[in-house]
Image (cartoon, rainbow, N blue to C red; front, side, top):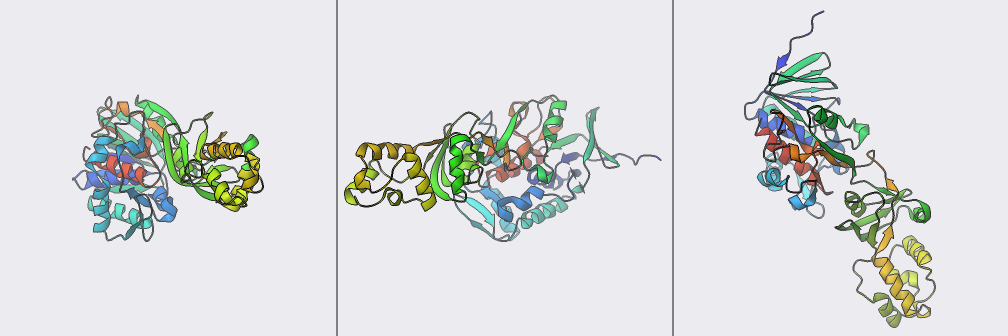
Length: 393
């Protein structure tokens, strides 16, 4: 039985996620013959579950300083040439209703499926071929062309785009395929680790598991980064937007510092003691009851403020403003929204996303060592890097 003939294209894009589909649509509408290959039964799987099913598709405050990379300047070019406003213009052209939830985060009023449908429509306008349900069996490179074998088919093209993301959320089929392929072509990979991920606590700090489900507004700090949003105590440790943000900057062995009462001025407990001496310390904290109980117990404070020495109140203030948790790990790639690290940017062109040493090879989206904050930043990087690549191939 003879094998079917090799199909030829101008570009083959591995990965039918946000970056891959946007690059494909961009290139296809420029007249390029494009093939998208994805192992999943349908494209856009991660888009569909994002934002609670409503897809936090961009952030109006997008800026390069809200991305983590070994080269913090790399993302500037792509982000500057395709902005959140540009993507919003596309959203509006498709009459997709949207709203700003908080902190510049934009969501669909309807469902994330609207974004996938829009991307597929954009691909259709460029006659993009899409092959789903076919894991890549082999990738070759010879005589200036790349060959990709998937299912019982083989395709070749002078351009190959790695858009298969990182290993976060493996239940959707995520893997380290992008890194394996990049290394085969001599590209370096910055050590990948889970990002935007809950942190786990152990030892003495396990006592806080007794208040699982309690959430409060905090400022969480890891390294030099600080985020003010909600923190959530869980049966395994810490989660919530503030913690997920801080997790991207946290390293094993380091502490996460949390200001549990970020709006309180210096001396507030002593002032409360003077103004309302008969108020109990737990009530004075003004925190959710179970959290106030746990903190008062850890601070060894009980009873009315009038009966607590000023020195003890001052010490409590300092600790509440800088409570140090020492996570023993994270909940891993299974619960991570994205990946920090990836294909090293020093081997890529910041203008086109093409590999400097392998003409025709590109890497975009989460596969690359560019990771955004929580809240639509990673989708904007997918659109921007996809557009940069699609305009170049």
